[in-house]
Length: 245
Image (tube, rainbow, N blue to C red; front, side, top):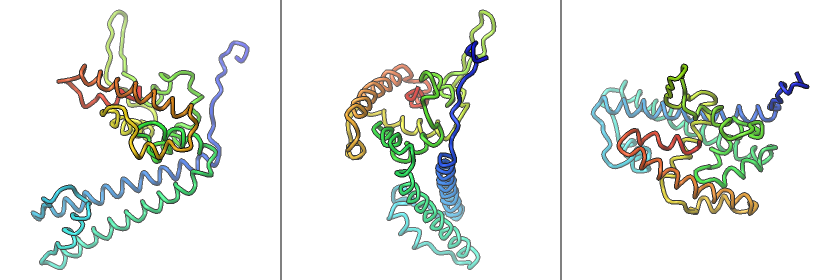
């Protein structure tokens, strides 16, 4: 098989990489848990006609509004307070996990890769860590289309003979890395520029990395605008998913 070229090398994560990936997934679980607990509290308040009209939820003003809420029956007040306490516990848990990631990632063998990923617009520290932990060594993919297929960011196809049938994105493969990429892609809705947050992330990176990131940003912002015009009036909400491709 080796002589025929049918053997393909595979990348195997080591123990440290798996440990970092477990921490990343624990952080994701913590964020999901916080989101659920917040929604449960909002549903309770909505059921009792308590609607906050002062702007967005979970701002300082919203938390002050929550602190002023009270219920006549002791049982309802207990339920309300328990949900408030559960949210606070979830917030603290998420903060601890974020602190652990910030402390451990710089000692990881892929720390420089994470830094390089952050040169891309929309690739925050968390997005870069998620992608590096879930994908590993991207050099195992010979071409970008192979990586996109692995992430499920390619259209499906069910063709027979002369009949060609193509469907929406397959959404196969690693959903965590795919979601991180799609969330980052939303930032390309706006014209190419270097924001203050991006400027901070670019500090200390090699010029070659910065140049590649800027070239990619210009290309992807233009690609979004072209895709948006093409999709105007139909499924324009799906355009960001095509940016990583």
